[in-house]
Image 1 (spheres, rainbow, N blue to C red):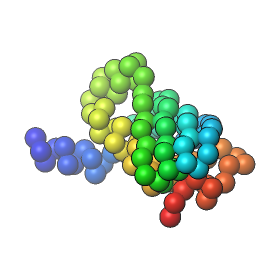
Image 2 (image 1 turned 135 degrees about the vertical axis):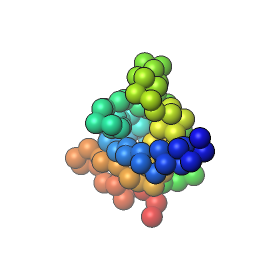
Image 3 (image 1 turned 60 degrees about the vertical axis):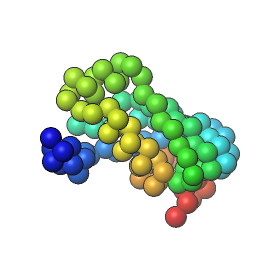
Length: 105
């Protein structure tokens, strides 16, 4: 079982698209979507200390959780990967929003 968990983590292909970002570099509310297994799901997040900064918390709806589970995916793993992508700046931003304004390299 532990081996399959490690394998699923390495095979998880999740991409993130930001729809809106409101706030400052110190605290921001984020709305967007993530894609996994060619399906798109909404999320919201709060970032403290900028995207790429110190802390970020992402949330998904109960219906999204239910659908992910029905697809055989681990919800905690998905949220971990979503937050990791947000923190590391692995995301797509809307036109006109400068990534360097919010991501620490």
